[in-house]
Length: 336
Image 1 (spheres, rainbow, N blue to C red):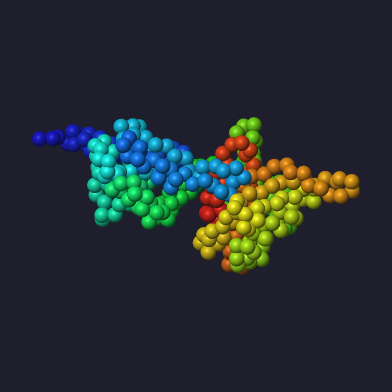
Image 2 (cartoon, rainbow, N blue to C red):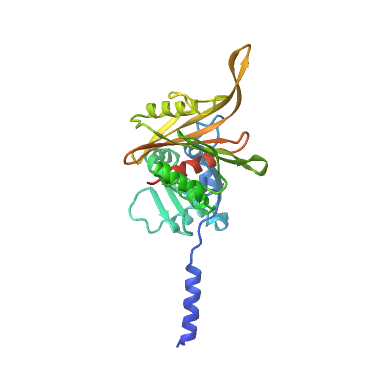
């Protein structure tokens, strides 16, 4: 018969072993797990599907980072935040199929695309994709494309937000924004006010020599814009009034580097920008290109006003995607 002390000890061991930690890893990395045989046949199809190129960056950059491992190494990576498990019934194998079946043994239906949250760690998403062969795999991916990318995007934004909000907040700037524009936005302590005028508030941060790229946030109250084209024109008009000694030109509405989408009845509009110095050349103004990079803008419609928020990044020769997603995540979380 088990005495009380032993029972308490066993209970403590059980509770400790079941406690889950938060997932750890790169915010926009997808860990793909499959057998060698399945990866051999499916890798071109998976890479074409997952490794989208970010068309609106001045230089193409991977939208997601992809890491592929065999099932035998999975134990070392079980706490990764975003995992894609792949199973092909043809060719048949043992290691990959066994791991896949164990994780998805309690799936609710016969769907070949399944999602599990927080299986090994908190803030974790595991996507299971099962197919008869490569042809069926391509069909499954195309049929569930939006569903899969919604799951991935939601997880990426969640991870970025969780990491960013651990930074100390600049309460002075955040309070100033709340008083003037009646919105709540998280601004970390590294941001400083560059210009504060009646028309806009311009913030900036960055020490490239320390690995902290230049980032700027501009906030301005605008007239309501109904269409993405109207919003983009307002973004360009805003840049036109920033500084008489310089000029910022953004990619046009139909440019391949431009993009837009609707989020909570508000518009996200992004693309690339180029920053020019204006110099006198024989008495005529001329523009000299200086820097460039990606930008993201968001129109937040308050009850009585519309607020334009623009973020820009300058990080030549280095990753820009994760910083762009960080700004996008901050803007998504704006409230009034």
